[in-house]
Image (cartoon, rainbow, N blue to C red; front, side, top):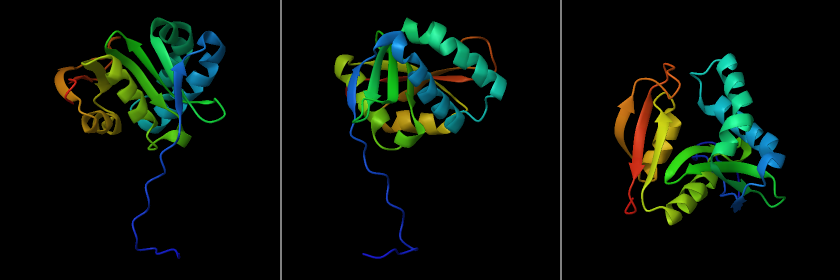
Length: 164
C-alpha cells in the first residue's frame, strides 16, 4: 500500500479502554491533567488565568462532589473521565492522545446504560463539544447567558432521552 496525498486521512483507530470507578484523591492529579489537556484543546474562550482558577478548584472541590468514572488505557492510565450527579453529566473530559478515538462515546454510553434520561450543560463557545453531544442524541432544551458562577460564558442546557 502506498501513500496517496489526495486521499482523505483515516480517522484515528478506536482506543480500547476499560471503565472503572475512580480511586479517589490518589488519582486526582492524573484526572486534573486529563482535564487540562482537554480544556486547552477545546476552550479557546478561557484565559490562562481562568484555566488556572478552575484547575485549582477541580481537584479540591469539583472532583470530590461527583460520582467519578475513569476511562483507562491498557496500562491503567486515565485517558478520560465522567463526573455524574444523578442523571446529570457534570463533567466529561478526554486526554489529547485519546480525543476522537471513542473514549467520550464510551463514557456517555456507560452513563446512558444507567440513566434513561441524561442532562448536561455545555459551553456555547465550545462548538466541538456541542457537536459531540448532538451527534450522540442530545438536544438543546434551554440556554443561560452566564455560567453557574455568573461569568459571561453562556451555557446550553441539553437532554438525551433513552431513545436518543
